[in-house]
Image (cartoon, rainbow, N blue to C red; front, side, top):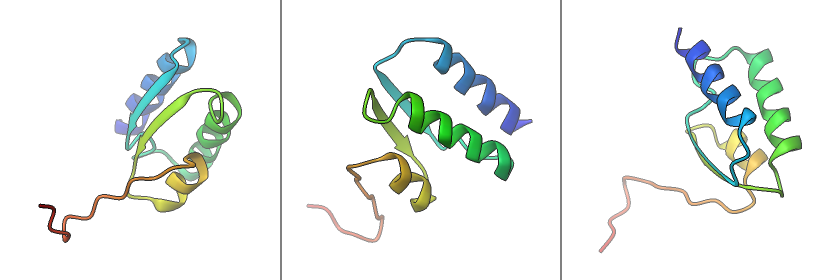
Length: 79
């Protein structure tokens, strides 16, 4: 399933020692309990130690992991 693929990719990242994580909707299709476990892992292992670029529609997830946020809104006109 999509959730299992996401978890596998996150496990591969966790096994590495990257200083930068690029996560695009990493918790999509993952059940609530596993989401909490992944978020806790990211907070404990990465928060404040490495850079995370975390793309999500869930602002609670973004706020939990990211000290600085860039919010893209397609209704804004950028010139």
